[in-house]
Image 1: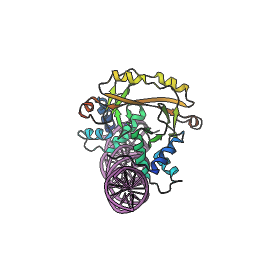
Image 2: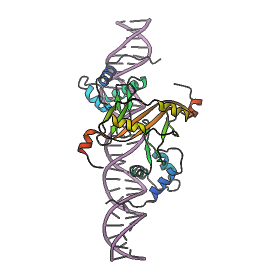
Image 3: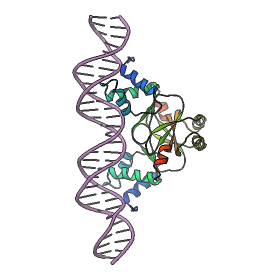
Image 4: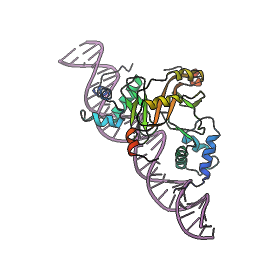
Length: 132
Length: 132
DNA sequence: TTGGTAATAGTAATTAGTACTAATATTAAT
DNA sequence: ATTAATATTAGTACTAATTACTATTACCAA
């Protein structure tokens, strides 16, 4: 039951994310999609982002500060989060799935996945922002 | 300027976290401290948790779902977050700081740190909760 | 002890996200 | 094509988590 039905809105959201290299927030998705679909509602954006995340078609990135970001690229990779401008960027390095195995040896529940985020100052902010 | 002044409330919060093996939320800290200091306010708890985090005396754990948790143990270690009961537990395994070096090679900003969280079902929930 | 300022309690406000509902869109069966 | 069943939507109301504001209180150096 609850078979999935096509929706133009969901399709747009998925395509929008697929066409971006950055990692927009729900708010950004909403603003951009609204240029083509002015009647889409923010709730619809949130609902579909959550649904697509659950289906595994996109990834949710929780930065630990501010709103969640979303990624249309579901291949195994890590993210860098700038503590100054809060932008999220890809970090194209070999993944380190061996830590999953190590973790499993040290834990008595079911480990299903892991997330590694890197923090610091991005190139732009390193230049501008010499404080702290 | 803005020299730090002693406060009984901040001291309690720090001691409370130091004496726990789990990783309470701000709300839990508030509830527990209130038994000894019934007039402490939730805002004070939030403010001091943020301040202590900034000072590096405690750690904030953002789970990506629900409220932040806090850890009085600032030694390098990782956390496991249960997707069912949302409890946070320690994962005592060798840290993998070599990934910092790898990451630095692949990124042109300043990488200052990283966080790895593991997700899945904890032992308790594996038993109870066979769904999903 | 007093003066300056940091910190607090209590409350109001904000942010990010979720829930609700009547109307609309999609799909499968006629 | 028409209809029926139901998933989805827009729009709005609401909630959870956290932050901001302000008058008062606590700390501490002179």
